[in-house]
Image (cartoon, rainbow, N blue to C red; front, side):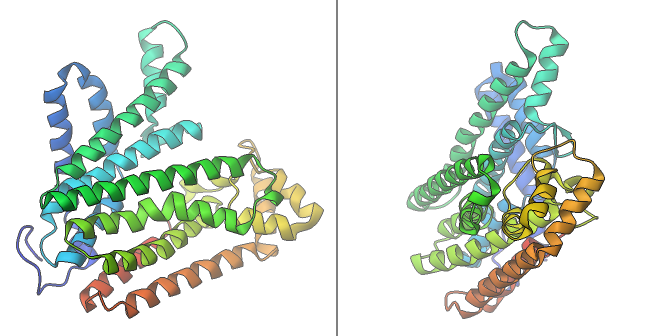
Amino acid sequence: MTAPGRPVDTQIMNFEELRTWVPRIERELLRQYAAERRRSPQFDPWTGTLEEFTLRGGKRFRALLVLGGYWIAAHRSPAPALPAAAALEHFQSWMLIHDDIIDHAATRRGGPAVHQKLRADHAAARWGGSSEEFGMGMGITLGDLEEPYTVAALLGSKGPAARRLRAVAEYVRMTRDTAYGQLRDIQNGVLDPGAVREEDVLEVHRLKTSVYTVAAPLRIGAILGGGGPALLADLESIGTDLGIAFQLRDDLLGAGFDPAAAEKSANDLAEGKRTLLVVRAWAAGGPEGRRELEAVLGRPGAGPEALARALERIRATGSLAYSERRIEELTRRAYGRIGRSPRLRPTDRALLREIGDRLVHRTA
């Protein structure tokens, strides 16, 4: 195993070794929150809320991709990119806090969603006004507060100032595209499923998921590691394909097609999400199939029999098989790009394929 801080030019950086950096990422997050407490002690309780939420759980996958991107570009220890890796965790907290408000979620990472915790705090203290409005208002603002933490962490990475500024520019692009994807996703959710096309669904996945889950973290790390435009273009193409495949897999899990993922089972149907599964099944299902989908789509109280009928309809129309084919096609194309890139060394290719396998072949 390569010791952090030691050059790794002749070593193989596989995903298991990359995961050994998780404790250092979490220590970096604790260091950053502690610095904020010293800077603004009067806001300590709210900083503590963010710290608890960010450290509560998560695989730190995006943060690890920042370190992986750095190693691919520099082929040495990714320690200088640790602050930037932590930045992606701040960004993830920001997105999750806001997503939970938009989706009216009660829990996240094994505990209450941030806005729900704050709502409960308000009710317990018997403060004036609406506990619901307090929780949402404070949750939105605390989510917003994670953005300056994100930017500060990026600027706090080690290395030439020009690279740090380029990393911030990549973060700006990532944030903008993610917001556009979220806007499109919310808009799709209020349209008749028949009015949402496959390309509309995939555009959301490209903007909302692939950019901030895969492509931008890899590129931010590679920028900090000195990667040139051609390498960054390769990572963009590879990350986009893998990110869309990742989200299509997540949609299968979220619809309840993996019994092992019980916590995700049928949530997407109950929330009324216009996934590729739903859009394809709606187009091919006929009046009876649409009635079966309507019985569960956006209906959290739908019973298990109605859910079972909807899932069977998605299978019978070929929509499930189609999504599996699209996942396979995107993954194959990404692996082809990995194999053909003259900018990647054999060890880089192996690491990126490992990352792809963990994104696409998963059950949670």
